[in-house]
Length: 68
Image (cartoon, rainbow, N blue to C red; front, side):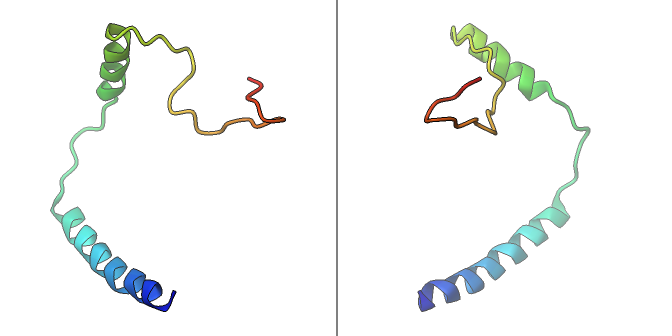
């Protein structure tokens, strides 16, 4: 575990520095939710009818089954 801990520190620092530098270069446009409707349209076109909201974040686990 000693080497893994060192790897996390070294490579995590490198990744963090690169991510911070990249974030400084990015300019955000106007935030939209068009991708949500596009995804829903693609699901409908593929015949994937599902009434459950996606992503399903919090499952209810009661005696091994979803009770919703």
